[in-house]
Length: 274
Image 1: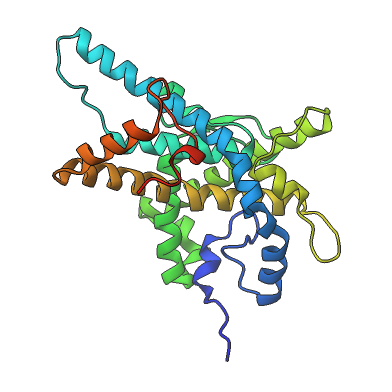
Image 2: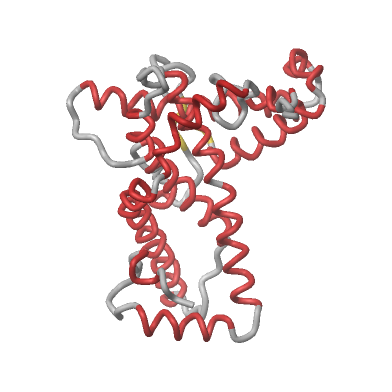
């Protein structure tokens, strides 16, 4: 016996149904087959160069904070690591899913371009805040689907602001995919990233993803890979610092495996560490 996904997932549809929120089994199978090659071992290995660039920027920013603290006579730099991990995750996913980072690490702030349609004028919104609000309101409306048609009219700003966040998050994806497709039409050399793999995807009939479906799937990558990555990274750092002996053991292992002049080692360098 098989069960269809509940109408809870309808609340998460914005541009059009993606791999995460489609409820039709045949449609889900079509999408999965078209997209599966995107996450092959070969494809993922090609993404490392983009991840590395963003991690190097994170190190530069943290070194800058440390140097500023030292020059001010402080022993330590005071920072909110979760915010920096948020910037890192968004910039990495932006780099992979949309062809360019959002520039949050370099700016040290939460900001992203938004376009409600490919031809709309650009506006700007705090992407991390938008993602969080979008998740909260979509979850609430998924639990109470009957509210969805009326949510924008409810007096509680939770719904009004949340639906605006849904619109803005979709607008971030529209803006980035539009830029990439425009560059492709101009003959700009394409990168080996998630969006390139999605643009190459074909269904069982050999047809590529349409613009809206392509945008929806790229948005799915942003939603799935950003706050999960940042929260996990922050938790790992917290427990490494909090648990006695862990940092010393970790430092020893890294010093043994990684050359002194390397800030960000390659996956090949560290993949066999204990």
